[in-house]
Image (tube, helix red, strand yellow):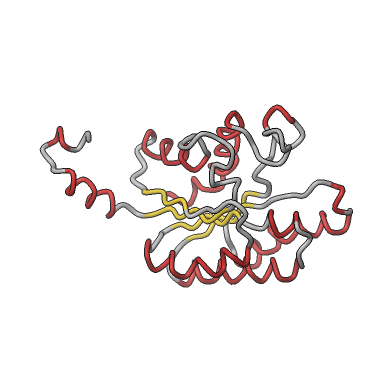
Length: 201
């Protein structure tokens, strides 16, 4: 509505916003505001920070609770065609790990998504996750490593661990001890911001 005060009609403001380069977030429940108030998640906070810091970017959140890397792989081509993002943030893999799925399949799904985004002309920020130790030393180590390996292989930006700084503090989690609560969202944004900022310039 601020645009109307400048003498622009609402449809003109919408058109202007649509010309802003797009940051596409493809994630799971950690990015889809699961269990918290709508508009309080880290992706919305990212949109607000970009505006506050005078970055002219539009954020599109295409995250779905329960999404796996396979689901993201199948959805990404249409999202790339629809939104033509300049930056793609891939925050997927956690549900693969929690279900004990094949790490080779997860790696290939993420690799395919990164390649598709890069071939479309977008820069990629890969957001890594870690699993609790009860999944076994080898599996948890290899799971964490695959994000670093892919980022190096495909030369993408990397957030090594989305929950860095809060994973061991239950006060940042909902009762299920899996999903971050509203208080944690600013910390998640800070973790992502460090990897994203160089891509915005």
